[in-house]
Length: 193
Image (cartoon, rainbow, N blue to C red; front, side, top):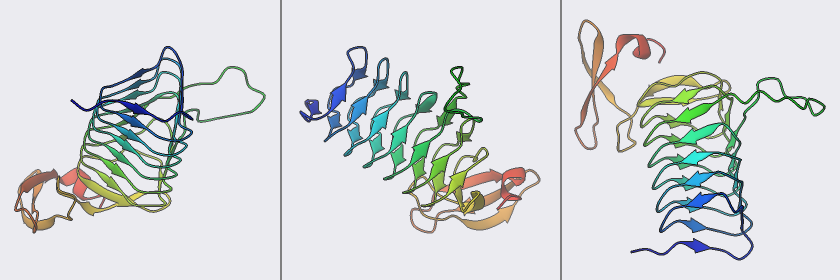
């Protein structure tokens, strides 16, 4: 079994939970009641807010900031300098913050420097390009980037861009040219690409 590793400069609050085999690197701060799954990696100066839930095999690269209200499922990649927001109308003088939940579903990847506006869901195996601002829900397997992030195509579970193979009444048939996996993408999602 892999042992959990916590660098001496990391701060893990007493009520936080860190799963077996997880590596917590330099200057990480994990706030109270946060839950980190098994075999995760939290890079240099990662911040995990109060009550955040993170699944197994998640990688949070250097300086990722995951504020209260975020939930990240298993096998998610969060690039360096990614920021999750949590209040749609923040004011420094307001003592009654409105925490709006955000969900990143299993297998999704979020590129470096992306900002995730609270209240969105990023679908399973979706891929968000570096430097994007996510302002609305991203469907499963979507490739989205820009400011605001727009769907530019769809990706396989392996991360390669899918090619269009054909059409059905309610979906577009797509296939990965790398691993030959086939997918049916709902027409409503494909129309946004």
